[in-house]
Length: 463
Image (cartoon, rainbow, N blue to C red):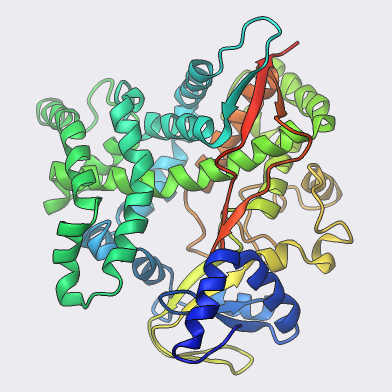
């Protein structure tokens, strides 16, 4: 899509940077029948898949053909931002899939406690008064605290400097990647150390985390791996699994930064859109409150209880269908030449992504109202068919918000749990509205869907 000449392609890349949503919408209409196209960003051409047949090919492709991890490594210049050990040994990923996700039920009381505390620390209306608060700033603080309660526990998860460091880290990595990208491999390490903020962030994180890590190592040496009152958090899982250099406090600190990089920004942006929608569509408040109050009254605040809030789940999933983290998903890199089932040849080194918005807004999939927000769309689909298929955490060819196939976001169960808890708590304790009658619109940088950072939301105690 766009001009393909050596120099003229940069004009297309600049347009994609500033108006990525429009570029992808135009490409979808133009190439929908063909099922595949390419678009230029400032660093490369990206092959974009539309058709379900080619998405199925991508889903089934082995990692030694189409690699998610190598795609991420290229995008974020991982060896020079997150660190070479993160690239070579991503042992934190199976921990997320296994120990961490399995422990969410046991962790939930702390997740709930942190979300309640973080919200009440920021929203302090008196009586019937409304207060105005910056939406993305508010959400980012709550999400970061909830995340780090499960990553490192109290009291560090409430340390303002530690939180700010982790909230800033995503942008540090993005900036660092763009600085490193133009340089040859032999110079990237020097450039990263001298001219990017990532090394300094890692040093600061290590300074914050090192006393905690050394204290836990002391307990492990004295009492063994399963000592009494051992913290149930991600740092403990890392320390249990780390071998060799990964046991070093700096490397463990780097993994905590990586977890924050993966979890904070995407969840914060997604929930900010959820907040805008619930604030701008008061007709959803009463049925959502009724559902949450009924479930909580019967079962209390538990992970199992929230799993029964189908309308709540649907509202979040519908938000992510229309306002997900980006219009592109299912990142892969061809690590060897690859040919799709329709004969399309993909040379080694090519970046491939699926057009999530094309699937999410397709009337053949979601009906004539595909472009409209219907908060209970997936609850209605769930009632009419497969109960599990339409959950917010589900992935498939028709819903790509969390990716596709084995590399689908391993942290999605945690992210959705955090968002459901946040929305449920807000509904039960506050009235909320936007500052105008219009729901704030996102902006787009390349394919990324970015909430309006200037938009405020109004809160008051529930009347």
